[in-house]
Each structure stands twice: as structure tokens, then as C-alpha cells.
Image (tube, rainbow, N blue to C red):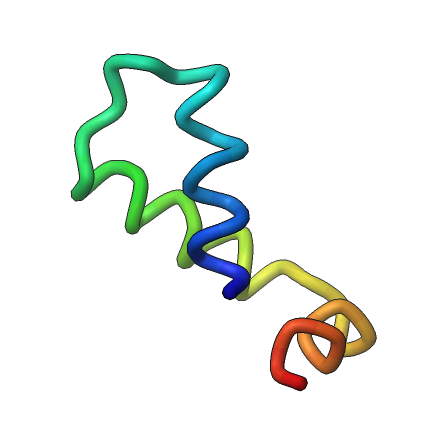
Length: 43
């Protein structure tokens, strides 16, 4: 769910982003999220 949400959100601002770039960016965002935010998305 997190990835789907972020993917939609990021594509709006980065129309030319590749799937590979998107995946790398979302992975970095996830690693930097707070434990509270991660818990929210893991439910």
C-alpha cells in the first residue's frame, strides 16, 4: 500500500521518472520513515 500510494504521489511531480528510479526513491523514503509511519502502513 505504501509503495502504491507513494508511486502515485511521486509520478504527479516527476512525469518522466522510470520504474527503476521510482522504486529506488520509494525504497529510500521507506527506510527514512519513522517507526510510527511504518507501523501505520504495515497494518
